[in-house]
Image (tube, rainbow, N blue to C red; front, side, top):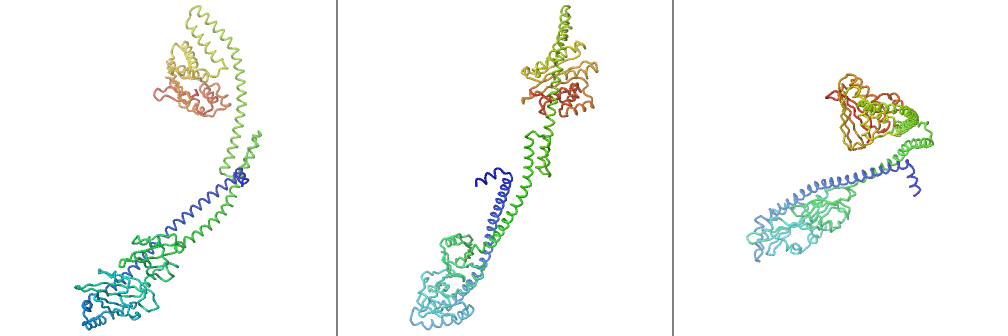
Length: 591
């Protein structure tokens, strides 16, 4: 196991395969689970609705069936003969009247009613004087000497608007074809004389109505009383009541639920006429048969797709990782110093782009190495040139000091100032070892240059400097601002001869950079010249570019800033002031 884990950790191919296969397993499992869950819930709901509609129709049929018997109760119970019969039997001399009333009731009402209801077993009448009479149906064999007073329900029957229904064993009958009887009983009272009518029927007709409820194999339809006791059920075995199930049924008027202990769906409704509960028990296997088929089919499809996915992932990962392994081997060659070899990676995907990017990186690296070598050569040449300039500058310093001494003897102030300013400028520019200087020194170098220019041109140049004293010691690249001031004079005053103003404003951006604005009151850049300069300023820095513009002021400053920082931020931006028309140069450098 640990060997496999170690192997997976070392192999990108195995990691990729494991990740994809895990995603497939999670997705398929999630889809299968939620599909099964939602299908099961939907089927339960549909079965519940369908069963509910069937139960409603069954209850309507049962209600209609019992209403027909209620009509029979009313016809017989409200008849003149029955009313007279209730008051007879108290005296021993009214036997004849009893016989007459009973004969009339039998001929006028009972015989025709029995003929219309073949399931009717018997009709019994009883009055509180102790008299009773039983009228037998065509298929009933009543036990001799049986009395309604022997029935368990006899003492509990009260005077009510409707009749009461009881289901009990057929102990009063000797027919072996049925074991239970439905007894419908109603008590009547006329002017102080009371009694009851009992109609016994076979449950066959009620069971026929229940048999119409067909919700699949092994489903059971039954009738229970209000307390949850089973009374009648369709054929299919004896129903063994579960107390938990019957308690849930007895607590509501109608509804459905899944009963987990017996794994059945239970749907029930209340029969209004009798307060009985009609129930249907459907095995969940019947309900979920379609779900199980979908589940099994989904499992088979998932396994097949998983195997196909394993093969597909293997092929795809092999195609992907083989090129990555080839790329890794080429990188190892590069590590040994072989920069001339280029990687040949086929395709158009990300791996191919990575190989092409690596080739471009090698090209750039090789160019950078060549540029560095050439830059070092130029640096050595510059140092040599600076040494030569320094040798010549000593002679110039001595000559300027002599001029200053002679001007001092004759007290010629302008010659003295010119000699001192020119000497400071030469000393500042010839110090090649000091590449960075304080910003205050750079501004003094510009002031010396303008002082000499004003002596030459008669105070025609106005220099204005706006900078906070806290920025004096900020280090900046040497000889950046003086070429910009010289450029303003060259293309402004020297061209037009008109007095001009040069403004230099510096501010600290706070993010490690300094912005210096150099603007003049001249005529600005010509449009074509401005476009050409902006194009050349946008070129990437390189040694060949540097050599080509080494004698040009603006571009020289720009490329020196770019070559030094190489951050893409330092450099110059040029333009014309939209209000005055003068040239505006923005210097961005690292502080």
